[in-house]
Length: 442
Image (cartoon, rainbow, N blue to C red; front, side, top):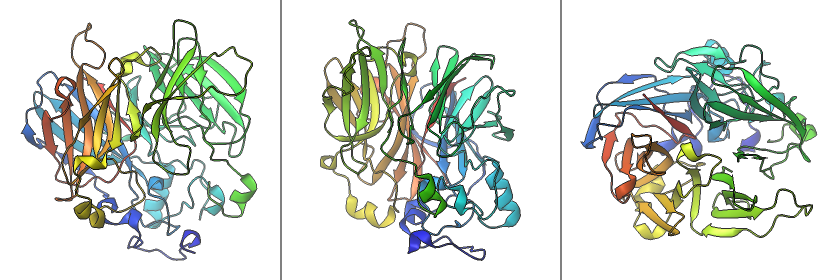
C-alpha cells in the first residue's frame, strides 16, 4: 500500500499525491522580498513582525504517502512598519534538515515513529508547528522534542534550545502560554516515546526555570495544547493513543481557545471539539468545579455550531475571562467557488473559507469573507496601541490562499469593521498551508 512504500533510492520528484499537489506543492523558497505590493492601506500604528511556520519538505519524502504536516519547518517573517511590509523566509536548520541536505535525499521516516528512519537521529524534530518570541529569541517548536532557537532578525538557526541545561524533559509543547513575562510550558511523553509522563514548567523573562511539576497521564496519548487559569492548568487529552509495539512494526503514530475561573471558582474552558473522527468541529464550553469528585465532565454548551478551528484570543487576556475570540470557519453559504478551488487545492489540510469574530456579550459571530476563490489560514490578533486599549480592539492578520492566482496574500482586518479588509498584501511566492504563528510588537 502507498502508506507503507519506502524508497530505496533518491527520488527527485514529489509523489503524485494530493498533499504534494496544487496549492500544497512544496514551496521550498528561502530569501527575502522588500516592499511587498499592498492593496488598501496598512495602519501606521501597526509596527512589528508576524511570524508563521509551515511544514515544507525540502526533499521528496522517504515514505511516499507522508502526511503534509511532517515537512521541514520553514519560517516566514512579515515585517510591517510605516505602512510597508517586507518578507523573509528561511528553513530551520534541524538535525533532520542538515543530514538530509548533505545526503541529498530524505532520511526521516513516518510521523512520530523513529523505527522507520533510514538513519538514527538524536532529535527527530522538524520544528514545523509553531514559532514564538521569548527572551530575545524565536523558538521554533514541535511537541516531540525541544525547540530550536532562531535569530528574530535574520531567521538564522542558533541551535537546539536547552535553556542553559535547565530543560527537565525530552519534549516541549508547541503551544506555550505567556502569563505576563513568564512562559508556561509542558511536555508530554516527557521521558521518551511511549512514556505516560507529563512535565509542566515555567520560565521567567530572564530564561530561569521557576517551577517544575511531574505528572503521570492516565494513558499515553496526544496532548497537543493546554489552557491556564489563575490557579489551574488544564490538559485536554486527545484520543490519539501511542502504541509503542505497533510503532516498532511500522504503524502510524485540538486547539484550545482559553480558560478562566468564574466568580464561583468554577473553571470555564472553551475549545473546538468534534465527537466524530473528522476535522469538522463545533465551538464548545465546559464549566465545571475543579474540586468535584465526579470524574465525568458536565454537558458542554454549544457556543458556535459552525465548523471552526485555529481559535485565537487577545493574548493579553490568556487565562482570564475573555469576551472576544477569533477563528477560522467554514460557511458554504458565503458563496465560495468550490468548482474553481477543488482542482487546484491539493489535499490533506483543513479547509476554511472565512474568519470569525465571536463577541461573547452578544453571542454574535461576525464573518470576514476574503473572496470566492480564497481559503484562510490561522488568524492572529494585533492589539491597538495604548495601555488602556479594550480587549479585542485592534486588527486580525491571516495568510490567505488565492486559488484563482495560485498565490498567497496577507490580509489585515480591523476588528471595528470586521467584514471588510483594511489591507491585502500580495506575495510573489505561494506559501502552502501552515500551522501556527504569532505577532511580535516592535
